[in-house]
Amino acid sequence: MAKILIVDNDPEQREAIARILREAGHQIETRADTVGLSEALHSLSPDLIILDVHFPEHPHAGIEAARQLSANPQLCRIPILILSAFN
Image (cartoon, rainbow, N blue to C red):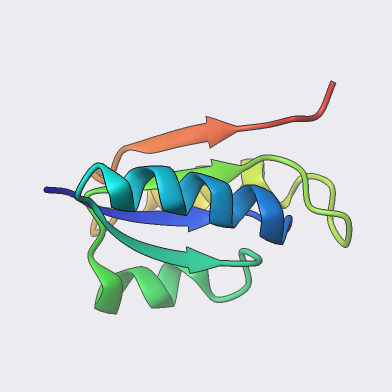
């Protein structure tokens, strides 16, 4: 199955998603923020990133991370699923 990275500051949300995906047979890695995300991706090599949009310390961190990843030739092919409970 797929190796999926979940990036979400909400521990309950992060673990709920991780549990569902693990039960489906996926390998899951999690992070609570986007700090150092590009560097971490080189060693993690996920097949998919589930990325929260809004982080309290920096409201646009998720969008900025997605833009940085899509601009990076080594990381731009990793699909990003944007997640938000923000209304």
